Every structure is written in structure tokens, then in C-alpha cells.
Length: 129
Image (cartoon, rainbow, N blue to C red; front, side, top):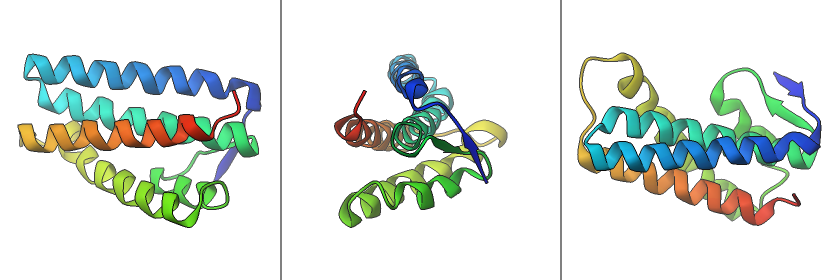
């Protein structure tokens, strides 16, 4: 499922992605690994929403992995493959970081931030805003 969004609003998603990434880094410094992972996940969701909003005037409104089909026509195959792997890895951490009693560790947290940074960097390189 998708939702129509005015392409002019893509910049708002970029700001949300940047702010979530900033909060992830602060949480990492404070040892709040679960919050850092959650913020990394939300950064990547907003970054991909910025890309699809800017390019096709839509964002995914169903399951989070649905955005991967929307970005397929926007990115090169190589970019899509890389982002798909990074985003899938992040989504795989979402449930544990948000809802489960087991805590995230430093390595997982550093990986989550790294993937979110890479996704945002790729998205920003594609945007026309």
C-alpha cells in the first residue's frame, strides 16, 4: 500500500531522518543501545520515505519492507541491492530493540547506525530538493 504525498514535503522526511540519526548517536554515547537502534531504524524509514516522496510522490503505508519495491525504479540495481540488505538488517533489529526484553549490544548498535548513515547518504545523493 502507498499513500500520496506532495513531493515538496520530502525535505521534512530528510530532517526527521537526520534528527533520528543524531539521536541514535547521542544514545550510543550514553550507552542506551536499544534507543540508538530504534532511532537508526526510524532514520532509515524516513530517509526512504523522503526518496519515494521526492521521486514519485508516494510513500509506503503498509509494511515497512514494502518501500523496497517503491525504490526499485529510483535506484540503480547495485544501489537497490545494497540498501535492501541494509534496510532489511535494520528492520530485523526493530522488534528486539522496541518490544523484547533482551537488550541490544554495542556491535549491533554500531552496525545499525552505520547502515542508517549509509542509507541516508545514498538517499541525499539522489534527492532533487
